Image 1: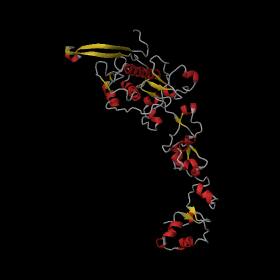
Image 2: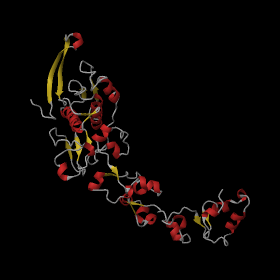
Image 3: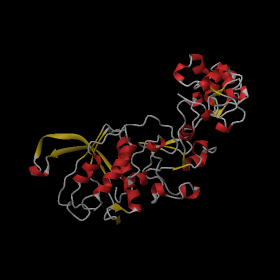
Image 4: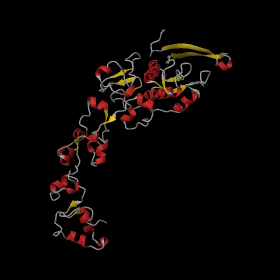
Length: 380
């Protein structure tokens, strides 16, 4: 069993605990505890630090060690864990950083264990330079009362759910191997993670699942940011034409509109916030749309597009154009101002409240004169 592999552990089952704690003088228990399982993992001794943080090499290695503890326990079908402040005593690992690493692994294993308990005692190894306030305080502040909910969607490429990793193209799901490729010391900030040669020699963190759902609230946490990949926003956003393959792995894109092909929102802000299917060339006149053919309606969007010329459109007199495109001005009246008797009443009225319903309906907010801009007409 010794020397242990850097990321290896010793799993022992069938142990019997028959003595009480130190404060009782290790007295014999009245009733021994049978069938206890133990997992021993060695932390780094005197690791290099950057202030109160582990140096990158030791940070990614320490997380891999913690991840393997969870993977081995799950492999042996345990549903509860009792953990320690790994390496924060005689081995001098900073407790605040170790607690944050545990936090990231607990997030990854959300739903795989019913409960996780930390049994931490501030003994003679606390109160030193690396843990002047002990170990209990840091772990309590970071993890006490933490509840993580399992992810319901397991098909996102390059993500991890407990011990299972989805391949970058989303086609393969494989389990963690405790002696897999060594972790890249640059973690989620590695500039070469998409290089084939580099990726073939080192493992890299998965994508942050919360960021994929636009819900990540821990972007100010350096440990979380180095433990999970957060893609940079694509400059083309929802209009990007390359949302596939390597480009999609490297850059973040807006989510698909929940209304899919049924979306009728054509505002600029909505178009930037969501991706949509291609516009059907027949728009609302599409026969398949009118017949509610689901396959076609899911693949294409059917809505009235916005006229590219906006308020400066010169085709406002063409009924077909007005019916097929949205404009920022009311629908023009089919008559010229001097031919429409309702319009004449509308612009000459001194008191709009005295106008009849048919005048209001035709020339107040729904229509405007053909030869004038809508801003020239009074509004209620």
